[in-house]
Image (cartoon, rainbow, N blue to C red; front, top):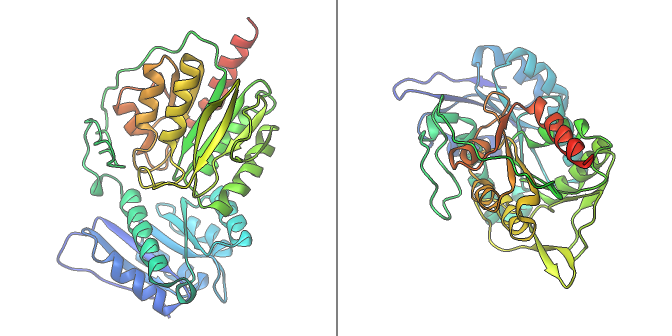
Length: 375
């Protein structure tokens, strides 16, 4: 059975509900989370039906929702949980199978906030468990918002991976939009990114035949392949996960594969894709900064880049490199972002030319490349 727990003493800023059929995994996650200051696990349930029955009384801020459960699975429970607890951010938890990746992407389109790849604890061993713990705690901290992030506009340390988010109402200095017509489009995103990217690409349907388009979304490998297929269909552009050493071509979408950083490099007269599985950058692999920085070096003022919703500060340093070389950076605004970490850090670094609501980004890009393409 499920349980709703009462907490006394230490102030609770973030209430978490765990929906997971394994009692061992539920207990493990609860133990990890309750060592975070200001976080309390207020309810646990072993299937979706029990979670629906108790979510109103628990009133959680965050729900960790397993996909595969008896009685009622996560994807079936998701819409009802969203209706019963509209304030809750729901993180889908699934093992890395093609089927579960497809279900997770569907869940994100239906309103889930994020996803987390869950290892097979019996098979994958302690290292996989430790990696899952780190990622779970990182997501809870990020989704908990300012309670777990000091607000500031200071620059991040070189390899900090996180930049304190700007305080509400902060005034940002903006760069001038590049006078050079764009020759390449770049997108960087994390939490909330798949749904945001889909919205932007739908607005750009049929308009990207003259540009190579590169995307870095923080995702595991199985997910990035499916995301590439979805975005390719949304924009009506050829595309797939990027392949090492393939040439950069107009009218093609390249999505960084999960687990590999994606950069651009010159090879003779060509510009080609470079991939590497080096250490995570900004706690992520793939990371946005390497793509942004390499594109800035090659394309300079002809870069048009976009930083969408996501926790952390990945992309901020790369955006500065683009802006310093005369390229343009668009940033999703706070109100339309699931987490205003990456776009907020980019704005705070003074790299943005424009800060836009999500629904205006695709339209703005379309008008910009349309006007310039007619010259």
